[in-house]
Image (cartoon, rainbow over all chains, first blue to last red; front, side, top):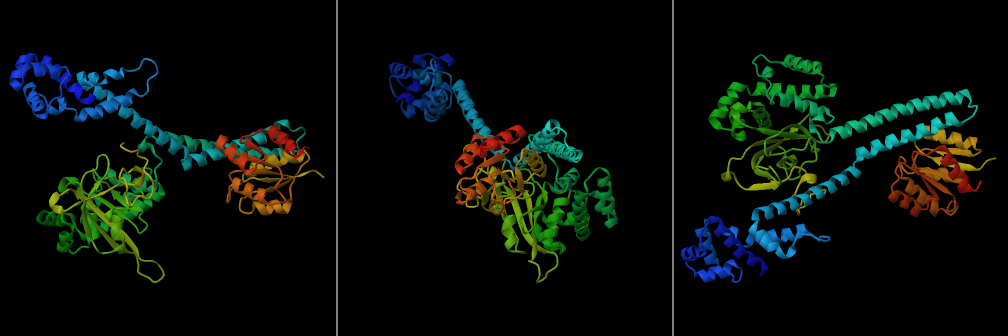
Amino acid sequence: MPNRLMIGTRIRERRVLSGIRQSDLARQAGISPSYLNLIEHNHRRIGGKTLLKLAEVLDVEPSLLSDGAEATLLAGLREAAGEPDGEGPELSRIEEFAGRFPGWASLLNELCRRNQALERTIETLTDRLAHDPFLADSLHEVISSVTAIRSTSSILVETESLEPEWQARFHRNINEDSARLTEGAQALVRYLEAAPNKEAEVQSPQDEMHAYLAAREHHVAELERDMAGPRDVARLVEAAAAQGMSSPAQSLTRDVLSRYLDDARALPKRAFLSHIEAIGLKPAELAEATGADMACVFRRLATLPEAEVGPVGLVVCDTSGTFLLRKPLDGFAMPRIAGACALWPLFQVLGQPQRPTRLRLRQAGRGGEVVEAFAVAVPTGPVSFEHPPLTLAHMLLLPDPGETAGKVRELGVSCRICPIKDCVARREPSIIAEGF
Amino acid sequence: MGKKVLLIEDEPNIIEAVSFILSRDGWDVKTHSNGHDAMEAVRLREPDLIILDVMLPGKSGFDILAEIRVDADFAATPVLMLTARGQTKDREMAERAGASQYMTKPFSNADVLAAVRDLVGA
């Protein structure tokens, strides 16, 4: 019972710290001074009731004196000690150490655990680096051009009386390859520089469009005016282009703003806000009261200022599961384009157009909060016999309404960063090491 | 007439440079630049030596090497493997697959010449 031995040491420690005499403590706890003396010297086991009393008198949490947490602590310390070479930590006095310096001991334990977690992260990252397809491609490109340049340039230098046609040809090849090498090396540098810094990542047109919306908090005042029309959309896009927006991003932004304009016309802000005031943030009831379709209500809610309706998240995807629009909500993370957790109700409704569903969700892992999700899929584009029906799924996210709204579904962001074990929907292993 | 070498590689400028130095050295150089039908090119050209890149479009150099080795006509033909990766794992893979020699890019022309001369005993 080595783990229990330390309790006595601790009691003694606490008593001395509090400046209480052994006989006084014994009397207040209702035990004999000699029994307490035996306990303090770890010669007697201590019963639960006595422990509680002593803790009460010493004014400490009983758990601080008991050994429940300490067994773990001691195991952790032994692990931290490892197999020391030469003069390592004094393993024989490990209980004494943990008993006398609980704070230091748990700090040591915590540092050791953290160290292990970091080692695992480094292993994972190394592994990712080694299998990074972009990195492998860029390096291959660089090596190939270097190989061609080296071989060609040594032909130019070493071949005596090289015919002018060959000479010209090899010069041209070197020129070509050096341009390729430059491009490859620059791509590599850009990639590596951007890696630790999300902001500096090479932006896709989707990122540009989302950055544009995010800068306006998804509310475009120019399109809220009664007189707003397509000309305002064109003007906004022109202004964005003047700010350096790429032309693919301009096209995406034009589409999303045109949709915004249509929604704003269907649900003018002032009238819609007064409906919300009367009904609350209830998408189905709002759709019924306004006569607008549910998806339009979702999108409209996500464009209203946070100051008026509170935080609202929205994600829209097509039949392939690719995100077309995403407005994150705090506590619910979203991948950038695709590859989200298959358990999201967003994907569930794709197979059942026009059948809305409502669920409470929580993403596993750090920072996941319960949110309320409403999802609905609506057909889009012309119906024909030649094409499969196209559907857009919408998922509206609102802060958690509380337990009355039903059970919470646990799900993830995407498999690679998801800690859920034994998940039926897992399609690839997580890079998050166990217990991280 | 020099000995016949078949160069299977997908980078045009590497093909040009290697062909040039080998031709000047008296080799009859044929080239082929993709993985899919590399084995057909081998059967058609019947080379005395094959220089084979590991990273080819369509099929990996290791797979092609395996095909070469199971073909009775070419089981003993020397094969010089070229790769951009010098890791021991790749080298081991190449040796196991039956490569006669293994060279890491970027290489020097002199090394290539020495290797091919060595392999064919010229």
